[in-house]
Amino acid sequence: MKIVVIGGTGLIGSNLVNKLRQLGHEVSAASPSSGVNTITGEGLSEVLAGAEVVVDVSNSPSFEDQAVLEFFQTSTRNLLEAEATAGVKHHVALSVVGTDRLQGSGYFRAKLVQENLIKDSSIPYSILRATQFFEFVGAIANSGIVDGKTHLPPALFQPIASEDVVLALVKVVAGSPLEGTLEVAGPERIQMDEIVRRYLSIMQDHREVVTDDDAPYFGVVINDQSLTASEDAMIGKMSYQDWISDPANQR
Image 1 (cartoon, rainbow, N blue to C red):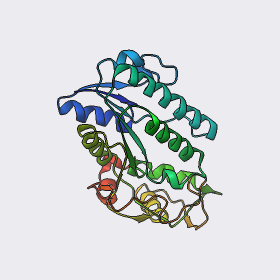
Image 2 (tube, rainbow, N blue to C red):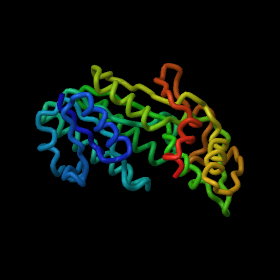
Image 3 (cartoon, helix red, strand yellow):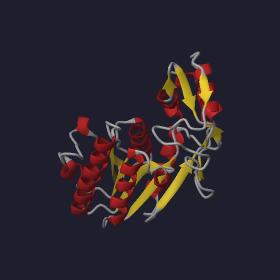
């Protein structure tokens, strides 16, 4: 099966490309560095020729409200139009658990626009919403810095190893279009402030973590339901402790 991975050189994309190739698929890793630009449309018709499945794991280079909205609107529209012309049979997109619950955030508003464009298109689709990657915990720690201390809420979330997200994507790609949304999450619900304390301790970073119910998560106040998955979500196998215990992840 010919598969095109948009964003195929990033954390998720590069691993997904390798996994799909190991399974015998013909896979193109599409990104601006390979001459495929979903914003300008450059290279799209060429890379999509003969493709049966397109997997979009790309992300905006800027998280500023207007920039991220323009990225997902333009990229998704151009991609879906090119797919329709090429006769693509399945569009798979990676999104985020809680997207519809966190509309106070410009990023999540943009992701919901992306999801709705996919749903309104003529291309059979599957949307996989994932929780935050373990690799993202360091960025969460840095996001809450106020006067040298990291302020974070004690809200539960359900982070996941990026490897488990890739395995979930492989299953979705191998199946028929869902014409709907599926969630994938880590095996544990963990307080955000607590996991960051563990992370900073392992990194030998002595910043104090201040527990604050009102501390925003990238501009949005969250609760225990904001970033946790539904009961019918796919669940990854790797725990955070197992992941962070690997020296390769301690950087």
